[in-house]
Image 1 (cartoon, one colour):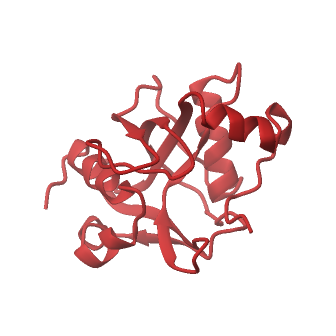
Image 2: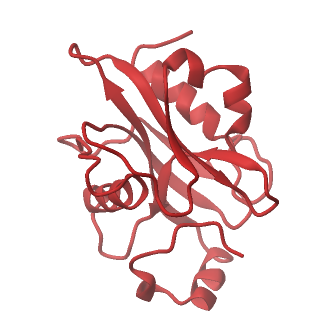
Amino acid sequence: MSVRTPDPYPGWLSDEDLFEARGRLPMVYVEAVPVRLDPLGYVNEVGSLLQGDADGNMVRYLVSGRVLYRETIRAALLRHMEKDLGPLAFPQLPISPVPFTVAEYFPAPSQTGFTDDRQHAVSLVFIIPVTGECEPRQDALELTWMTPQEVLSEDVQQEFEGGRGNLVRQALAFSGIVL
């Protein structure tokens, strides 16, 4: 049983072709740390998606997904923000789509600290403010908004899978928040 969000554009590769490609080359992804800002532009909330994994454990995820063939980074970001947070999230995409970091995922533990048991993936990671009403994707149990202090707590950090808690920590540090 898959716990991933159904891809609204499934025709770009069949499941078999995707499996074959993942075994031969790195996949390109975008990831977004959704945030809410105060009137001065400081991060006051960080969003994460809570869902069950294949083993029935509760894990936290960020907005993420593949970049399609011939798709721009901006288009991929917007598509995944709307897919994961709903069409009324109103993400504020950056003027220039420059990630705050690049995360490299491997199928086994590595020096990067990021793992994805399905594949080797290179992910461009962005901090994206949202101003609208968010409704989590269909496979997520909830979208949780937390203060920087809450999301950086040891208990919440352990709920992130594959090193994504470190991405949240890096995003907040990039935003000027170090606790």
